[in-house]
Image (cartoon, rainbow, N blue to C red):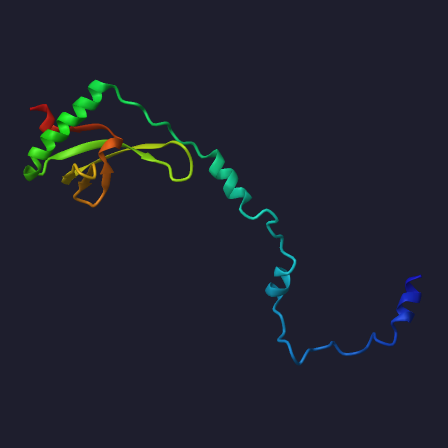
Amino acid sequence: MPHRIIEDYQDIMNLPHFVSRDRTHMSMIERAAQFSPFAALTGYESAVKETARLTGQRLELAEDEKETIARRLTLLQSRLAESPLVEITFFIPDDKKEGGEYHTITGTVKKLDNFQRHIIMMNGIKISIDDIVGIEGSIFSV
């Protein structure tokens, strides 16, 4: 049987390899890329990772904790000229899903904006006063 197939194609067996005049020769890498696997579900893997990513819940502060933070912010406002070093713990809501996470930064406060309810740090970080759960520093231990 294989011998018969060779006889069927005998007329083209010794012809030179065809080279197109219109298209450039494709490199081995380009040829291999035609057969590489593709992602049929584009974005599926990132969606699974996003769903699996954990976020923490925002804690509700007790009234006495809210009052302590308010007193400390008032004291901080009155002593901004001294450039006191403070450590602020605050909640950052997640942009993509419910919840978020708590961050603690240490630095000097540049400005307290009571109208927009923000603290602006010297390094430019803006913290919502409503997201603060703790504020520490040596100025509060006097």
